[in-house]
Image (cartoon, rainbow, N blue to C red):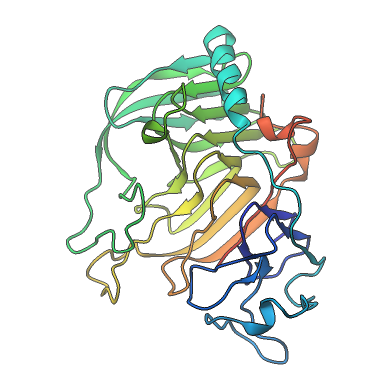
Length: 335
C-alpha cells in the first residue's frame, strides 16, 4: 500500500504500509472478532519471526499497553486520535456541483428504472444506458450478515439512451445509482451519484464491476467518482479488476458485500464469492469502514492500493477533497 491512510473510525491493517496510517479515535472495537477494544490503528499480523495473520483479539495491540513499533507493517508509523475529516460538509459541494452540471455540465434526474450505466470512451465521449434488470442471486446465496443495501449490484439488462461528449466543465451529475466503467485518454471527468436535498433512504450509490482505466498515468487522465451513499463492487465483478479513479463515499463505504452464507458451499454464491485481484490507482475517501475482502477469504484475495500523486496538482473537476476545507484521504485498508 502506497500513500497515507486515514479513517474517522478505526483501521485494522494487515498488509505493508509505506506511508503513515492515522485514525481519529484512540481505540475501537474491531467487528471482525470478539474481545476488548484495540488501538485505533492496529494489526493482526504476527510479530516477526512469526508470520501470517491471527484473527483473534490481540492484547499487545490494545490499551493499556504502549503502542508497539511495528515497522514490519507500518513502515512510516501510525497516528491515533488525529482530527476527524468533515464528510458532512461535502453536502454543500454536491449542491454546487448539481448547479454547475445543470449550467455547463451533464445532468439527468431519476432514470425511472434501476439506475444508469456510464461507459467512458477514449474519444472524450460516454455512452449512457438505462438499467432495466439486475442479476438474480444464485439459489441459497443470501444476505447472511444482514448488510444494509445488500444485493447483486450487477446488470442483466439495459437500454442505450445515447452517446454524449464529456461536458465542458467535466461534471456528470445523475440523481440515481450509477454503474461506471470504460477507459479515458487525456480525459478529465467527475461523476456524481446523489439525490438532493439529502434524504438518507434515497442516497445514491456508484458501482464498478468492470475495469475503469486511464491511458496515461502522468496526470493527463483523471476520473472522480462521488457517491452520496456507497461505492460498491458488485457480485458479478471482474475476477481481476482495476479501478483508476479518486473515490468518495460521502455517507457510506467503499467496498464489496459479503456473498457467501455462513458455512456456505461453493454451490451457493459460487463463483462470485471469491475474486482474485483488485487494483486501485487514485485515492479513497470513505465515511464508513472500507473493505473488498473478509477474514474468511470472501471477496478479493489480493488488494493492490496505489495512491495517485498527480491528484495533488491535477484533481478531477470540482473534486471536493482538494479544496482548502478538507484534508485529502487516501486509503483505509482492512483485511
